[in-house]
Image 1 (cartoon, each protein chain N blue to C red):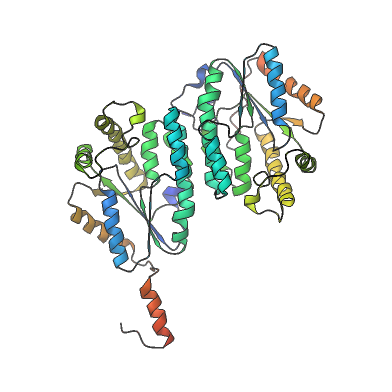
Image 2: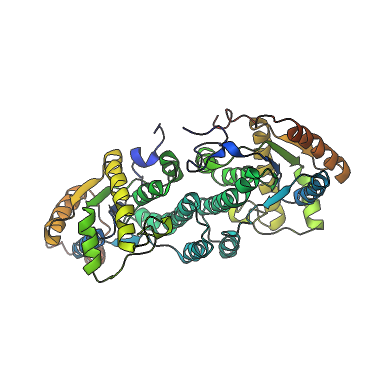
Amino acid sequence: MADARFFGDGLKYLDPSDLKGKLIAIEGTDGVGRTTHLEMLKEWLEVQGYGVMTTGWTRSNLMSKTIEVAKAGNILDRWSLSLLYATDFADRLEHQIIPALRSGFVVLADRYIFTALARDFVRSTDRKWIRDVFGFALIPDLVCYLRIDVETLALRVIETTGMNYWESGMDLRLGTDLYDSFKKYQSLLIEEFDKMALEFRFNVVDARKSPEEIQDELRGYILPVLQNHKPPVGPKTVHS
Amino acid sequence: MSESHIVKTAPHPHPGKLIIVEGIDGSGKSTQLQLLHKWLESKGHKVFFTEWNSSELVKETTRRGKKLKSLTPTTFSLLHATDFASRLYHQILPPLKAGMIVLADRYIYTAFARDVVRGVANEWVRKLYAFAIRPDMAFYFNVPIEVAISRLLRGTRGQFKYYEAGMDMDLSPDVTESFRLFQSQILAEYGKIVDEYGLLTMDATLEIETQQEHMRALVEAALRGYKPRRGTYGRRTLFWRRFEIPRSE
């Protein structure tokens, strides 16, 4: 009875048939410039007259504070951490994303469930449970993946925000210091993202290019989605 | 359909024992578990008790959700699963690994019954809890809705809990009536779960002592072969062994 618009067991109390808008997800590891590009895309789309709503990871009204508190405590086990992300995502899906799609907005998602899938997999090496949990997620109309190599990423993060505990996966004890841990953790994430890129047919964009080139490429992927009413990316490969 | 319910099939690998009780509010399950707890301790067992209570973190989030009126069936379910995960990891697994007896007041079946009534998919909530371990014994205290209501009305608690009465679901403005409607549906779900997971059904309308006697007999039989981690008794044995004094028994 699962609806084809959901990854797995969907929100059975919701009817997804009247979602007129388009859901576009921008994925990529920490520090690849997702947020900057998302802002530029929003501007570009609004100039063309599209209604645009952006939604960001862990930014739900219900959960953003809870997640901050939980992370500050550093006491999370693998399941709780993933379930907190799932709750945050569900809250945004039901209160922001679906209502916006219903009203015909273009929804730009700064990260989507693939971030949670990658993070959980790195911690558990089990793909099944977390994919089942996120079964209620809508399949996006388009996923763009800003891909970067870990060397470039490390330099970029040091130059800008600096490395933090969670982005370095310090809870996993992968390395002796922040830098080693960051590189190992982010390499594992990139590896998993690369696998998902094939499985879920992401549009891969090289994030080492200039911002203008990246933006052009992203726009090139988005335009056809808005013009033709193409069916969403296939759900068949999801559970393979 | 139900190909991979770890909860249904594989027993946990730990030396301890997990005994859980299920039932609606007013079924008397907590009373029975408390009496079992006393009995097990009096027999020298190391016992750890845990209940389906929200952690501060989740309580605060639930409060926020209630204020914003924004909890959906899915977020409600996920929040409680988060809490359960952390309880399993921090409270249930360590004593089980240490070989203790863990008594849990409510377990995953509470979520299966309640969350499905609230509207999430039956299959989804079962997959959500696939990380849970299978209890060694699971008791279900079956009680007719009217008995539960009359117990709660004349009980020390004095009133129905907001979420237990399903007050957020707008079933009825009257809290007793809302409880009746909501918990009747939960009873129906429990009925299915009992068959699906082989819970031991207890007649919760019987006298307290009668139920407890029955429960103790079942637990005693199930603990046959279990090597208890004893408290002071065990230490005393070791103490005397040092002096090579033969044990009196």
